[in-house]
Image (cartoon, rainbow, N blue to C red; front, side):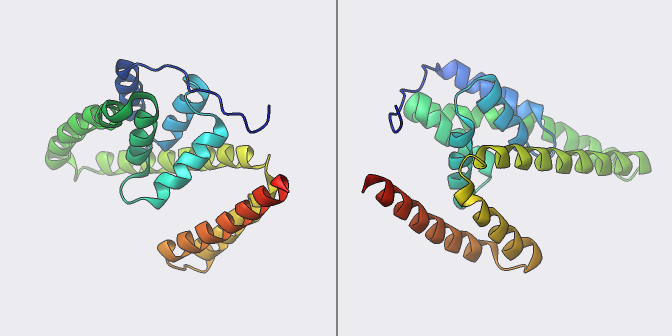
Length: 188
């Protein structure tokens, strides 16, 4: 039935910790594509639409998007303990790796091979972000009324170089007003 909300599946605290550990250790240069793949495709803790909605909220909040997402998903499935364990699982492994890499970069970072490797990793990270954006857009196409907002935000930020916070606030106000109008129209 449309509008009926299903109860989320039971997820243990250990599953939250190890799931987000897996996400954290999967990515290099950004784990958001891995988070989407794990949360939507693998574990099915979120639908594609829920992921888009939660990520939109997390992008609006201060701090790293994926950490905010870990808190939100952890809270949803594990309460306060889940909200603490999920981001801890997300960050624990990468922090240890970053500390090790910082030591190695300090010793070998000036080598041309190390610089070339870092450029390749950055290119791969950019490709992953484009792939994730494409998959997120596929979930939005079911609600084509909101696609112009995507184009407006792209033009405002990428082409006109307007300040991101102002664009986000305007986007939230405008899309919220449109969503409210649509919901009111459906209810009438």
